[in-house]
Image (cartoon, rainbow, N blue to C red):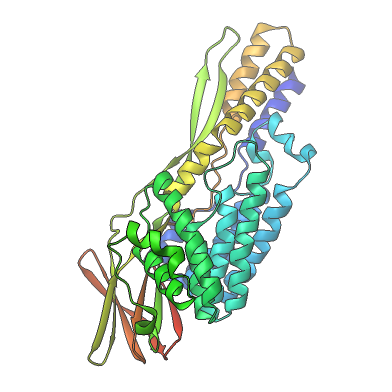
Length: 424
């Protein structure tokens, strides 16, 4: 019995030793404008993540450095995270079986499917901020490849098969790189995926996507290919290609709100030998307090403004992604419960001992609530076509106007990317 109790205590300790960063302290640094302290805080508390949350350390480091404007350092972390996530995703079954003995915390966190895809998306944004359009396009294509590989693994495919914003961003980058043909292809594909977004996440097709598609269709002699779409979306009245020629372009990317947090939902099934515990993760979404926004660019007497549009609802993608894999989660949870019960039956025929084991299992069994906590909840985008000049950028959100420190010095035919966050 002493050996048994020692084993139970060891399992409980193992189950509870998952690392935990104090995200409240991190959020405080970011909310008070102390971005460098936030990046330093993660580095200082690297060990707080624990051995099985190495991926989250890399992802948090990457995102906070990105928000601090350290785009090169951010991508170094993103690249390391991508390699680790791939290794963990393809790790051997023998390592995965450890989770059947205790809980999912006994194996390294490999990330949700959408989290792995967003590594490439944010890395692409870093590259456009660094002015490296070629590498940004590489990341955009890698995102597609990763999603295909993930969905090929399952019989029941996820709804999140392609990323509409990544496709649209790819079109913007191609156009900035003077390749309107490839830009048209990405704009067209992004429209198809945005239609899926509208059905699955209630994210409307952004007007900017349609405007850019119709404009590049004219520029590449593909007007006939989009004639039916022009009839379907007859309310879209964007610039024509000849009107955009000679103008610069400001692409404003807005990271808004915080991504959802996983919590532990437990189901207790009473039996004569004690309670059987089933634990499932679920997301808790905290919607941003402000969603609407307007971007204003001023240069001397010239003023341009446009509304921001939702291009990526990470909150809804996360929730739907978890729903998509619910069957797999339930199957694994039930299999673990059955395996534990079989082990309990083998350990002892004594009802009191089995009762004690089942009670101990209520402490050990817990859902995997690990998640990428530094993601935004939503991404908005707007773009402004402007004459040459040096522009001051203002953001008008819910009646509050903020002047950005960033200035956009635009030349004819040039594209500038501005990144703004209201996550904290």
